[in-house]
Length: 138
Length: 323
Image (cartoon, rainbow over all chains, first blue to last red; front, side, top):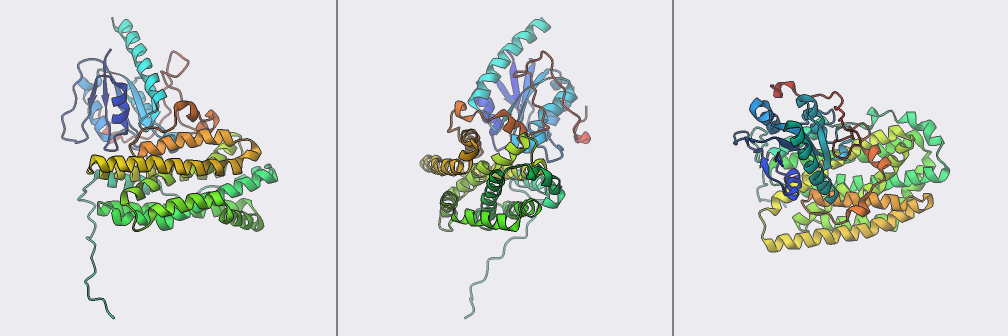
């Protein structure tokens, strides 16, 4: 079992999603001058998507700042992306952008603060994921 | 007689001094997403329109007149009614953008009509919309909450429900046609409207949550009761409206799943939990796919393969990706 690192804007959707997972989680600060979490174990990143109609700016700036540091990025194993299907092709796009850039899988996509079904699937999925991860890295 | 009281002069807006970053973020999103119906080649749907039965055509025009009414209300009453409650001058500016885009949406349906339908059919559908009791009932319920003497917090709740819930009994139909490869250009236009309404519902809901933070627990409880009560009242009307429109083509139950799903999303925009349980929100996958047609839908936990698909090439801001 390892940690989650997440970002949530003031709308709080991603924070509510992470809270309901009831797993150890570190928050990336909203304030650009805030202290970044420094996870010492492998982690999964949970992020909302901010893309415009062309897909620009999908990954929140603070998430980019977090990932820019190689020592923090080293522990990233997967990404879970929030979004809204109403944004069409750019739904949960932040997950795909990070996946491509950091070569980690998009583990799951959810809308807004997620549904009960999402919470159950992610809890179960993360559990299996970390167990497989331990076998690979052991 | 001349009024001697000095008028209140608004402060000149300074976008370089923000009280709430979200105002600029949403302003940028809305302005970048700006569009006009002329951008969409609706005339490519003329042949497809001819493949619909007369009943299906009538249903489609009726659905679009219903949507036109909601956009008109939001353009002329809803968004302007929120302006006096704005907490920052930037919020007021964002609301002017929202109001104008609602006028663009309302105008778009007329573009669809002039491209695909006869004047006689369209006039008949507008008459139908004016006389439809369920459409009038939902409009009346929302307008009552928008009233100038009404509670500013309740105005925001009503506005989010209009933006994030009431449109969807109508939006369902072009998504359904699109899933069957019909009226695909019209669906492209509707998706632009859906995208805008999603930002509107998100932003107004966000402002609601910011105001709510400052209130007493008692008042928070009152507003939550109000929100769930209003959702239920609107839902009952929507069920009747949906049945009247969709019973003939046998889609009522399918539309209702979509209503439940969107009602829950509207409540989430206000920061509230879901009202309808997951079993009632299982939207037809073809409709979900029509909503976000080109998005990557494969993910590791719910996918069947052992590998994962890397997303298609997308625009990023390279200067922000230093590594």
